[in-house]
Amino acid sequence: MYGRGIMRKKVLFYLLVFVFLFTCIVSIQVTNRTFDEKNASARTNFNNLKEVGEDYLKTINNEDNVETSVSSTKLLKDLNDKEYTLFECEPTGYMILCNDSNSLVEYSLYSLSPYLNHSNNLYYFGPAEFYTLDGDNFVHLLSNQIIPRNSYKTIDSIKNYSNKMYNSLLNESKNTVETKGINHNTGKSGWTYVNNHRFFTTKTTEASFSFYSIDKGACGYIAASILLGYYDQYVKRCVPDNYMQFNNSGYKEYKYNSVIGSGEFTQHLLTFRNNLNNYSSTSTTIRTCLTNYFNHYNYTDMGIYDMITPFFSSLTMKNLINKSTPVILFGLIADPATSGNNSPNGDDGHAVVVYGYKKKSGGGYEFMVHYGWEDYSQVAINNNTCAATFGSMLRLKTVN
Figure 1 (cartoon, one colour):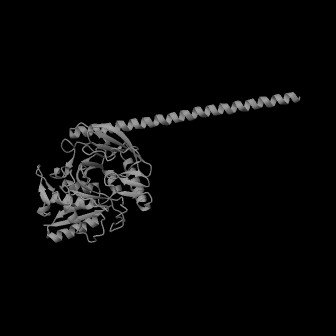
Figure 2 (cartoon, helix red, strand yellow):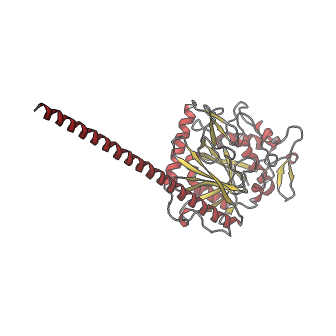
Figure 3 (cartoon, helix red, strand yellow):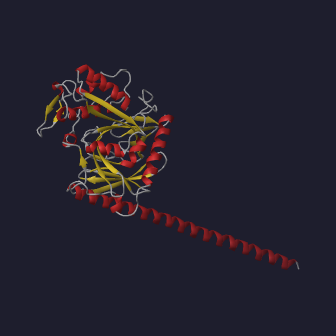
């Protein structure tokens, strides 16, 4: 009887060992299969995104009668871990797509990728907001603006605006190329521009649009300089003659000063701020500055009108462009160096000039903008980004 008990225990022991080993083997196989399925799913998603991007590029190439091809792809993220895919093109150009909606967020065939020569820790917070994480700082790749990770107010704002943009993009169609955004409704390219729009597209050098760089930011004043130059040539004289000249194409541009370099007029415009210690760029601060400027030069037939969200929309800008009225859009993402000064929400960000639009077949619009940086004079942005990342708008008007 004792021997039988020993035998039963041995059988039971070996049975338990067998069950344990079998369970481990099955678990490993299931884990490997799950891992392979995830890899396969990731490969499928990437291949789909690549196909979508190439379809977009083919259509845009046909519109502009150019030959641009994809040279590389890079992964971008926002602070909510939502992913975007960057398509870098050659000889020039870039596109940014939202991975979850297949929506084209922004693109340019004529500008180099802002992420060129960067491959790690790449972040995208919306149009004109191109960052890399360097240690504890987010560094803007074109303006070198720094946002510390511990700037909690700014970081929370970025998360909020990025989430709004992402949710807006999700509402776009994800299916066919036809619903992704091209509609030939005005001439070959489908774009509607203000009159003499090449005034804006030819402003590719810093001197030509009076670029001026300071640590505390001057983008709103640069955008105002661009707008004033256009009005001076085509609407009403509003820039003193000593600041501008004609280029070889017949468009006015700002002069290069051999002593101070580019940005002479923008520096002059900055002197008309009410508070010389405030470099904030919102529609409110720029309106005040331009009012002082017009009064100083007795440009009594010039006026300014500005609006903050939600009192303007994509339709507002579209209707103004139909009237050949370019506008300035002011970003919501705060610069820690300037935020809180005369801004309706305590925030202010990059300013861009809008001078064209195209109706998308899936609904909504794309807008053509000048970013106020060298070689970024023709960038198209998705209208679904505008309400989320831009907080105010300004236009000039003539007074009869």
